[in-house]
Length: 310
Image (cartoon, rainbow, N blue to C red; front, side, top):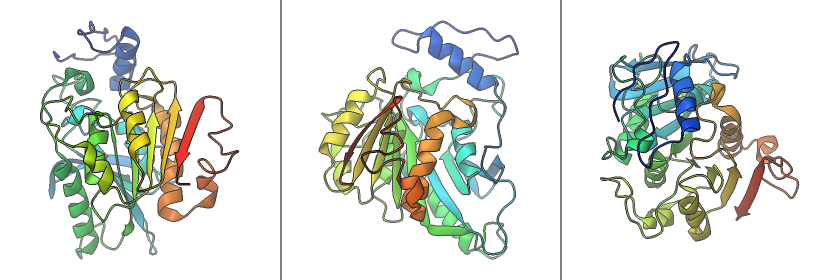
């Protein structure tokens, strides 16, 4: 898709065949215009480039913990398996503000930090060949764990290697399922995604097979956008097939982008945080969002909940 320079009066471009609807395009335009937000958590977050981790963006608390405080890690797979590490920037800044370092492969191709000529690219609908791979997601983990062990690093001793999660949106969610087999990963969240039932790659270069589900070793949360989500059938098929680990499937009628484009990541970010707090910290109160006949999402009419293994 042609680049769309933005201004305060940006116009919505026409939708390509098979692409986003006018409503989605308007949401994209609003999202691109939003500034980076610090999140609502107790640790206001920033996003930065790191010279020692090229072609990645690092979302982290602006002030790193002192007195022995530790941060968790969230590895991210980008929408469209693109190199747009800012494709979920508001979501990742929100996660980071609650005490996480979130790392996404690529650079800022959308949002206020993107070069003007690149603003407006929508990799989720362009269906270009993949620009990142699961190995690129895991490079972020290699880097942050090395920084945690390196004297002189500002992350030295500030990362808890037991609090590592992998997540991603759309095509990046499929890559997250691939990366989730890494034994260093302890939680998985998949947004608006799933592997095609017959394993057919829907983007050139996407090679993750359905058998990746058999390599999962930790509980998995799927957050989907309801039947109107283009990945709905794939995600539901994943849910039916997963049997080795506990899995939760939650749906909210927000379509394929969920609330990724909303300030602070919207409702979806808060559900993701509850999963992280439960799975990585053993927070029983956060776990009640998902467990029991009267779980928080179970009694919220906006959500539908299915579970196996809990």
